Length: 185
Image (tube, rainbow, N blue to C red; front, side, top):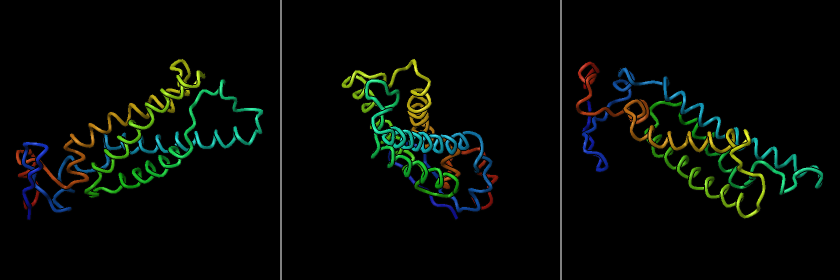
């Protein structure tokens, strides 16, 4: 059986499918851009973990390393620890099709990352007058530019893609061309 769901944010009528019906849809599954999402979540978790490890290593040098004026990355230990957990959790959730709250969870985590990281590194760079967040350094691109760009893309993709809506939400548009080919829809 299907149930029609009206979402006030979109004028399109969405039809909720049973898990078996969603699994038979051509857009269902962990392929294409969904694999980019999964890899991006892993990348964001790994870069946050790497910054934590680099900070711990720098602090273990007892002042012989980690000079504020010379660091290339901005360190935000509490936020980085939170983002390691959040992105690792989101990575695990993304591997499980049928997680109905996936779009909301990804929107919250990616939105928090962008809202927190961009002002933080900008303020850190300008308030401390360090080399941190220089667009001339490759570390900045790997640790901040790429993850922020990914999160901005993910915000749009998880909320607008029919693939994520079918794979995670179990919904198709009422005018979906494959709707008639799904058993029971």
